[in-house]
Image (cartoon, rainbow, N blue to C red; front, side, top):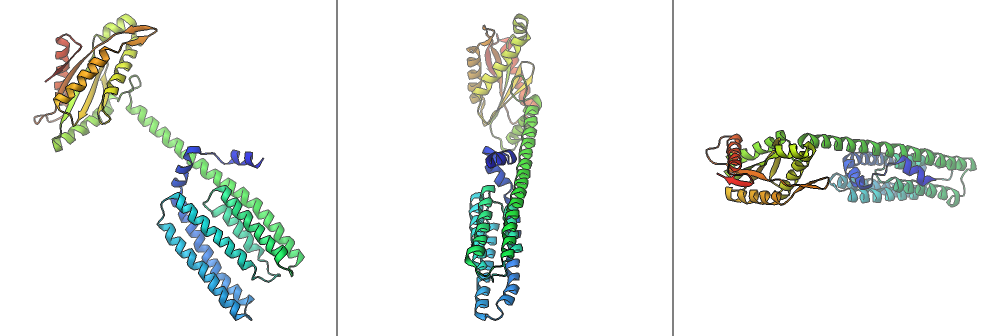
Length: 375
């Protein structure tokens, strides 16, 4: 029953669990540091209580000063370590260690309290703080909180003989109530944080998808004309600055109108999609391929000379000639004409190079199509 309740309340982030912890790491660090500072101040304040409890036992009071002072010093060291940690796993281990030692410290201190001084309010604050403020996993916090409650009640029930029965009943009832309230509060907080993170991830993914779709031609899955020219302009600026080789291919499907007339526009769409796929398979990761319009495509080849670009163009032309498109079992053969140009010292803009590559493409068509023509 509890497992089903937790699974319904706490969103299972699955593969995003690690990202969720990293996303909240800085917030968790700030929160636990604040909690540590408050706990240190509280422990220091308990020395005033020790002064009252042990005013006739100076040796015990000195021991308590050293004991509580050691805890405060340890907490300061842990705080300094947390400020330098950037890995969730190390952070979790450090916090788990500090919390475990803190609870042991408080349980040991419980032995020094008189039987008629149970400090129930202080004990339930500790339990509630674990549930609400600890950045550890929900299951870990639950075990720590339950362990502290059981340890506290065990000491009060079995290790002390002069405990008032009414005070003991109040302490037991308070521990049960705070466990229920702490558990419910932790579930709500964790659920809210996880839902907020999931909403953030969904929104981020949606924005990335919108950006992707805005830059991708829906038919051919190549870059849109606008995005293609945006990247191409950047590559040309790099060429102009560093004078690194840069070549451009203009690719045009041959006799595309006849394909549409003979097989229909749906067949034309299949041909363009297949041509785009073939071209993208032949390019490198750093190359930029996009649809310029209609049945014409462009390919930007950085760090590529004219001779190297011709090899790529020949490969695209050959592979496409040997790759028929299939529609309803009918094979549609098509060819391409490709013009190749390399950016030179006289080129002032990207248009200068594209214009020459486009001119070479038209020369390829004039020479009979299904070929590559370079400058």
